[in-house]
Image (cartoon, rainbow, N blue to C red; front, side):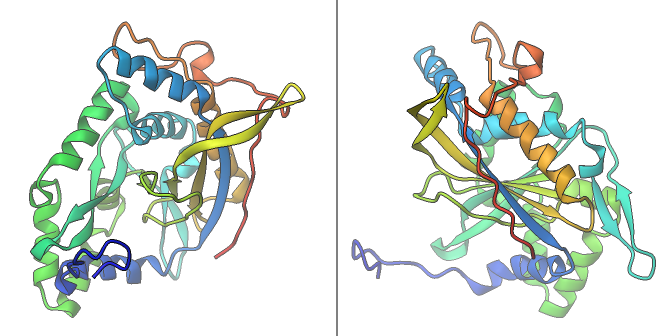
Length: 293
Protein backbone atom coordinates (compact mmCIF):
# COMPACT_ATOMS: atom_id res chain seq x y z
CA UNK A 1 0.00 0.00 0.00
CA UNK A 2 1.09 3.56 -0.61
CA UNK A 3 1.99 5.31 2.65
CA UNK A 4 0.26 8.53 1.52
CA UNK A 5 -3.07 7.67 -0.05
CA UNK A 6 -3.59 4.01 0.86
CA UNK A 7 -3.78 2.85 -2.75
CA UNK A 8 -2.27 -0.45 -3.77
CA UNK A 9 1.14 -0.44 -5.41
CA UNK A 10 1.65 -3.08 -8.06
CA UNK A 11 5.25 -4.36 -7.97
CA UNK A 12 7.16 -4.31 -11.22
CA UNK A 13 7.66 -7.73 -12.76
CA UNK A 14 11.32 -8.66 -12.17
CA UNK A 15 11.61 -10.18 -15.63
CA UNK A 16 10.48 -6.92 -17.28
CA UNK A 17 13.53 -5.18 -15.80
CA UNK A 18 16.12 -7.63 -17.11
CA UNK A 19 17.07 -5.36 -20.00
CA UNK A 20 17.64 -2.52 -17.50
CA UNK A 21 20.01 -4.69 -15.48
CA UNK A 22 21.87 -5.68 -18.65
CA UNK A 23 22.26 -2.01 -19.53
CA UNK A 24 23.47 -1.08 -16.03
CA UNK A 25 26.14 -3.77 -16.01
CA UNK A 26 27.27 -2.74 -19.49
CA UNK A 27 27.32 0.94 -18.43
CA UNK A 28 29.77 0.27 -15.57
CA UNK A 29 32.63 0.64 -18.05
CA UNK A 30 31.72 4.31 -18.60
CA UNK A 31 33.29 7.20 -16.68
CA UNK A 32 30.35 9.54 -16.05
CA UNK A 33 30.94 13.08 -14.84
CA UNK A 34 28.07 15.40 -13.95
CA UNK A 35 27.51 19.06 -14.72
CA UNK A 36 24.51 21.27 -14.06
CA UNK A 37 23.14 24.69 -14.93
CA UNK A 38 20.16 26.88 -14.06
CA UNK A 39 18.23 27.96 -17.15
CA UNK A 40 16.00 31.03 -17.20
CA UNK A 41 12.98 29.61 -19.04
CA UNK A 42 11.13 32.93 -19.36
CA UNK A 43 11.14 33.00 -23.16
CA UNK A 44 10.23 29.35 -23.42
CA UNK A 45 7.29 29.72 -21.02
CA UNK A 46 6.12 32.80 -22.91
CA UNK A 47 6.29 30.84 -26.14
CA UNK A 48 4.39 27.92 -24.56
CA UNK A 49 1.70 30.27 -23.28
CA UNK A 50 1.23 31.95 -26.65
CA UNK A 51 1.16 28.55 -28.35
CA UNK A 52 -1.44 27.24 -25.90
CA UNK A 53 -3.64 30.27 -26.62
CA UNK A 54 -3.52 29.39 -30.32
CA UNK A 55 -4.35 25.73 -29.72
CA UNK A 56 -0.84 24.23 -29.65
CA UNK A 57 0.82 22.44 -26.76
CA UNK A 58 4.55 21.97 -26.34
CA UNK A 59 6.31 20.15 -23.53
CA UNK A 60 9.56 21.34 -22.01
CA UNK A 61 11.13 18.07 -23.14
CA UNK A 62 10.41 18.97 -26.76
CA UNK A 63 12.16 22.32 -26.39
CA UNK A 64 15.14 20.53 -24.86
CA UNK A 65 15.27 17.96 -27.68
CA UNK A 66 15.07 20.74 -30.27
CA UNK A 67 17.85 22.79 -28.66
CA UNK A 68 20.21 19.94 -27.75
CA UNK A 69 20.08 18.33 -31.19
CA UNK A 70 21.00 21.56 -32.91
CA UNK A 71 23.81 22.31 -30.47
CA UNK A 72 25.31 18.85 -30.97
CA UNK A 73 25.53 19.36 -34.73
CA UNK A 74 28.35 21.78 -33.95
CA UNK A 75 30.16 19.47 -31.51
CA UNK A 76 31.48 16.36 -33.30
CA UNK A 77 33.51 15.48 -30.19
CA UNK A 78 30.21 14.77 -28.41
CA UNK A 79 28.88 12.62 -31.25
CA UNK A 80 31.18 9.70 -30.55
CA UNK A 81 31.72 6.62 -28.40
CA UNK A 82 34.58 4.99 -26.52
CA UNK A 83 35.84 1.73 -28.00
CA UNK A 84 38.59 -0.78 -27.41
CA UNK A 85 40.21 -2.22 -24.29
CA UNK A 86 43.75 -3.04 -25.35
CA UNK A 87 43.72 -0.09 -27.76
CA UNK A 88 41.33 2.51 -26.32
CA UNK A 89 40.07 4.99 -28.88
CA UNK A 90 37.21 7.35 -29.65
CA UNK A 91 35.04 6.46 -32.63
CA UNK A 92 32.62 8.92 -34.28
CA UNK A 93 29.00 7.90 -34.58
CA UNK A 94 27.71 7.57 -38.15
CA UNK A 95 25.07 9.87 -39.58
CA UNK A 96 22.81 11.00 -40.92
CA UNK A 97 21.74 13.61 -38.44
CA UNK A 98 21.56 13.58 -34.65
CA UNK A 99 19.35 11.00 -32.96
CA UNK A 100 17.92 11.40 -29.46
CA UNK A 101 17.19 8.59 -27.02
CA UNK A 102 14.18 9.54 -24.91
CA UNK A 103 13.41 7.67 -21.68
CA UNK A 104 9.73 7.12 -20.91
CA UNK A 105 7.94 5.91 -17.78
CA UNK A 106 5.59 3.24 -19.11
CA UNK A 107 3.29 0.57 -17.78
CA UNK A 108 4.96 -2.79 -17.45
CA UNK A 109 3.51 -6.30 -17.48
CA UNK A 110 0.88 -6.92 -14.81
CA UNK A 111 0.22 -3.23 -14.27
CA UNK A 112 3.65 -2.34 -12.88
CA UNK A 113 5.92 0.39 -14.15
CA UNK A 114 8.96 0.10 -16.37
CA UNK A 115 11.31 2.44 -18.18
CA UNK A 116 11.13 2.26 -21.94
CA UNK A 117 13.39 4.13 -24.32
CA UNK A 118 12.81 5.17 -27.90
CA UNK A 119 15.27 6.69 -30.37
CA UNK A 120 14.02 9.67 -32.37
CA UNK A 121 16.19 9.86 -35.52
CA UNK A 122 17.49 13.06 -37.12
CA UNK A 123 15.96 15.34 -34.48
CA UNK A 124 18.26 18.14 -35.61
CA UNK A 125 16.25 18.42 -38.85
CA UNK A 126 12.79 18.46 -37.24
CA UNK A 127 10.76 21.57 -36.34
CA UNK A 128 9.36 21.86 -32.84
CA UNK A 129 5.88 20.85 -34.02
CA UNK A 130 7.13 17.56 -35.41
CA UNK A 131 9.22 16.81 -32.32
CA UNK A 132 6.16 17.34 -30.13
CA UNK A 133 4.12 14.99 -32.33
CA UNK A 134 6.73 12.26 -31.89
CA UNK A 135 6.93 12.80 -28.11
CA UNK A 136 3.12 12.66 -27.81
CA UNK A 137 2.94 9.53 -29.93
CA UNK A 138 5.59 7.74 -27.87
CA UNK A 139 3.94 8.70 -24.57
CA UNK A 140 0.48 7.59 -25.69
CA UNK A 141 1.51 4.45 -27.56
CA UNK A 142 1.25 0.96 -26.16
CA UNK A 143 4.77 0.27 -24.75
CA UNK A 144 4.70 -3.06 -26.56
CA UNK A 145 4.40 -1.20 -29.87
CA UNK A 146 7.19 1.31 -29.39
CA UNK A 147 10.20 0.97 -31.70
CA UNK A 148 12.58 -1.55 -30.17
CA UNK A 149 9.90 -3.05 -27.92
CA UNK A 150 10.12 -6.43 -29.61
CA UNK A 151 13.87 -6.57 -28.95
CA UNK A 152 13.24 -5.73 -25.28
CA UNK A 153 10.64 -8.47 -25.05
CA UNK A 154 13.07 -11.00 -26.50
CA UNK A 155 15.85 -9.89 -24.14
CA UNK A 156 13.59 -10.19 -21.11
CA UNK A 157 12.48 -13.63 -22.18
CA UNK A 158 15.95 -15.07 -22.59
CA UNK A 159 17.84 -16.72 -19.72
CA UNK A 160 19.90 -13.97 -18.03
CA UNK A 161 23.38 -15.04 -19.22
CA UNK A 162 22.19 -15.39 -22.81
CA UNK A 163 20.11 -12.20 -22.60
CA UNK A 164 23.09 -10.19 -21.40
CA UNK A 165 25.27 -11.49 -24.21
CA UNK A 166 22.52 -10.61 -26.70
CA UNK A 167 22.31 -7.08 -25.28
CA UNK A 168 26.05 -6.51 -25.55
CA UNK A 169 26.10 -7.83 -29.09
CA UNK A 170 23.14 -5.58 -29.98
CA UNK A 171 24.98 -2.38 -29.01
CA UNK A 172 28.35 -3.40 -30.42
CA UNK A 173 29.81 -1.04 -33.01
CA UNK A 174 29.03 2.59 -33.95
CA UNK A 175 26.12 1.81 -36.29
CA UNK A 176 24.33 -0.37 -33.73
CA UNK A 177 24.94 2.15 -30.95
CA UNK A 178 23.59 5.04 -33.01
CA UNK A 179 20.54 3.03 -34.03
CA UNK A 180 19.67 1.72 -30.57
CA UNK A 181 20.93 4.51 -28.28
CA UNK A 182 21.00 7.59 -30.46
CA UNK A 183 23.56 10.38 -30.41
CA UNK A 184 22.48 11.83 -27.06
CA UNK A 185 19.99 10.88 -24.37
CA UNK A 186 17.26 12.81 -22.55
CA UNK A 187 15.62 11.83 -19.28
CA UNK A 188 13.01 13.97 -17.54
CA UNK A 189 11.54 14.05 -14.05
CA UNK A 190 9.96 17.46 -14.56
CA UNK A 191 6.52 16.12 -13.70
CA UNK A 192 7.72 15.58 -10.12
CA UNK A 193 9.04 17.87 -7.39
CA UNK A 194 12.62 17.13 -8.46
CA UNK A 195 15.20 19.92 -8.70
CA UNK A 196 18.40 17.91 -9.31
CA UNK A 197 19.16 14.48 -10.72
CA UNK A 198 21.76 12.86 -12.94
CA UNK A 199 21.63 9.74 -15.04
CA UNK A 200 23.72 8.08 -17.72
CA UNK A 201 21.94 7.06 -20.90
CA UNK A 202 24.76 5.19 -22.62
CA UNK A 203 25.67 8.12 -24.90
CA UNK A 204 28.52 10.64 -24.74
CA UNK A 205 26.14 13.22 -23.25
CA UNK A 206 22.88 12.73 -21.36
CA UNK A 207 20.55 15.61 -20.46
CA UNK A 208 18.51 15.37 -17.26
CA UNK A 209 15.54 17.74 -17.12
CA UNK A 210 13.89 18.68 -13.83
CA UNK A 211 10.83 20.74 -13.00
CA UNK A 212 10.44 24.40 -13.98
CA UNK A 213 9.73 26.51 -10.91
CA UNK A 214 9.85 30.15 -9.91
CA UNK A 215 13.25 31.16 -8.52
CA UNK A 216 15.10 34.42 -7.86
CA UNK A 217 17.35 35.58 -10.70
CA UNK A 218 19.60 38.63 -11.00
CA UNK A 219 18.95 41.04 -13.88
CA UNK A 220 20.59 44.44 -14.28
CA UNK A 221 21.41 44.55 -10.59
CA UNK A 222 17.90 43.61 -9.49
CA UNK A 223 16.59 40.35 -8.08
CA UNK A 224 13.47 39.17 -9.89
CA UNK A 225 11.38 36.01 -9.98
CA UNK A 226 11.59 33.86 -13.10
CA UNK A 227 10.76 30.30 -14.21
CA UNK A 228 13.98 28.31 -13.89
CA UNK A 229 14.89 24.75 -14.82
CA UNK A 230 17.98 23.08 -13.39
CA UNK A 231 19.36 21.04 -16.25
CA UNK A 232 21.83 18.25 -15.56
CA UNK A 233 24.33 16.98 -18.10
CA UNK A 234 26.20 13.70 -17.66
CA UNK A 235 29.13 13.12 -20.00
CA UNK A 236 31.34 10.10 -20.52
CA UNK A 237 34.86 11.26 -19.67
CA UNK A 238 36.30 8.53 -21.91
CA UNK A 239 34.80 10.36 -24.91
CA UNK A 240 35.22 14.07 -24.16
CA UNK A 241 36.66 16.38 -21.54
CA UNK A 242 34.91 18.70 -19.13
CA UNK A 243 35.53 21.90 -21.10
CA UNK A 244 33.96 20.41 -24.23
CA UNK A 245 30.98 19.11 -22.25
CA UNK A 246 30.58 22.52 -20.61
CA UNK A 247 30.49 24.11 -24.06
CA UNK A 248 27.67 21.77 -25.05
CA UNK A 249 25.71 22.58 -21.89
CA UNK A 250 26.31 26.30 -22.34
CA UNK A 251 25.05 26.13 -25.92
CA UNK A 252 21.82 24.45 -24.83
CA UNK A 253 21.34 26.98 -22.02
CA UNK A 254 21.79 29.90 -24.40
CA UNK A 255 19.41 28.45 -26.98
CA UNK A 256 16.67 27.92 -24.43
CA UNK A 257 17.19 31.28 -22.76
CA UNK A 258 17.22 33.02 -26.14
CA UNK A 259 14.23 31.20 -27.59
CA UNK A 260 12.31 33.03 -30.32
CA UNK A 261 9.45 31.07 -31.87
CA UNK A 262 7.41 31.97 -34.92
CA UNK A 263 3.86 31.00 -34.01
CA UNK A 264 2.58 31.84 -37.49
CA UNK A 265 4.04 28.61 -38.80
CA UNK A 266 5.98 25.51 -37.75
CA UNK A 267 8.45 26.40 -35.03
CA UNK A 268 11.93 25.62 -36.27
CA UNK A 269 15.11 27.66 -35.91
CA UNK A 270 14.77 30.49 -33.41
CA UNK A 271 15.25 33.86 -35.06
CA UNK A 272 18.08 36.25 -34.31
CA UNK A 273 21.49 34.61 -34.32
CA UNK A 274 20.31 31.01 -34.33
CA UNK A 275 18.61 31.39 -30.99
CA UNK A 276 21.80 32.19 -29.10
CA UNK A 277 21.46 35.25 -26.89
CA UNK A 278 24.68 36.57 -25.44
CA UNK A 279 23.56 37.15 -21.87
CA UNK A 280 25.76 38.85 -19.35
CA UNK A 281 26.36 37.66 -15.82
CA UNK A 282 23.89 40.26 -14.54
CA UNK A 283 21.10 38.97 -16.80
CA UNK A 284 20.92 35.39 -15.61
CA UNK A 285 22.24 33.09 -12.95
CA UNK A 286 23.70 29.70 -13.70
CA UNK A 287 25.17 27.25 -11.24
CA UNK A 288 27.74 24.65 -12.16
CA UNK A 289 27.85 21.40 -10.26
CA UNK A 290 30.92 19.26 -10.89
CA UNK A 291 31.04 15.78 -9.44
CA UNK A 292 33.19 12.95 -10.69
CA UNK A 293 32.43 9.26 -11.11
